Amino acid sequence: MSMPIAPASALPEVTASDQALRRFLHGLPGVDPVGLEARAASLGTRSIKTTAKAYAIDLAISMIDLTTLEGADTPGKVRALAAKAVHPDPTDRTTPRTAAVCVYPDMVAAAKEGLRGADVKVASVATAFPAGRAALGVKLADTRDAVAAGADEIDMVIDRGAFLAGKYLKVYEEIVAVKEAAGPARLKVIFETGELSTYDNIRRASWLGMLAGADFIKTSTGKVAVNATPANTLLMLEAVRDFKLRTGIQIGVKPAGGIRTTKDAVKFLVLVNETAGPAWLDNHWFRFGASSLLNDLLMQRQKLATGRYSGPDYVTVD
Image (cartoon, rainbow, N blue to C red; front, side, top):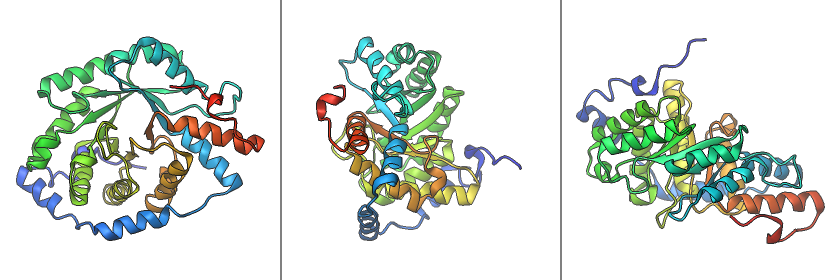
């Protein structure tokens, strides 16, 4: 079977010039906000019981990028978080590992140390996260430093100011450059959907990121008021589905920020299955950017196993 062509050259006629890129992005179908939100709300009412719920909880745990992105992060805190990623519930070794630990570039080495070779990725935010307000050279150095320290994945932020000013080719070229600097690391491109103002902009940003070579498209940094929502994630799932139909290339999706409960996580898994399809129900293609979500999933998992809640003392406080 022939391999699909690389995303950056998937539609070369679209990215040949600023005008061509603008024409393509503004030619995408407009989003019906009422219809989008109604569909997201409707899918969110689906109920999942017993065996299916147990499967969904384990799947959600395996999709978490366990995250700490605070100015007060210490190597000790990051090592402890990495240990939790490997054994989320030390009393039950059947609990799945999380997909990754997500940290700042200067904490990548501590995360690696805490993982002790376990099959959990180290993701690192880069490119002057979360604002993205830095020169390209600084962003590329930030990316290379994270990869050199051992990051398996890079979560970059786009220049929202350039995007909102209509400088699409500038944003595209920056993503391409960061993708090259990331080398073997998978690249997640963060749009900060809460700052993009409209659903049409989120759809355009999704296609722009995918055309530039994103391995994942990601909603948010978790550092603004509006982060992942069912509606904006549904829109991005439609984009990756349509992109694969057009190019043969599969791209992942990562909602981040504000997903705190098992009920929330299950709603997002239903969105994935019903929109992009079951091919995305795998942590290679779908992630949750979260910190507190894991604790609720662990408590719900134990309730299914024992019939009772253990309470918040059952899980570690991050």
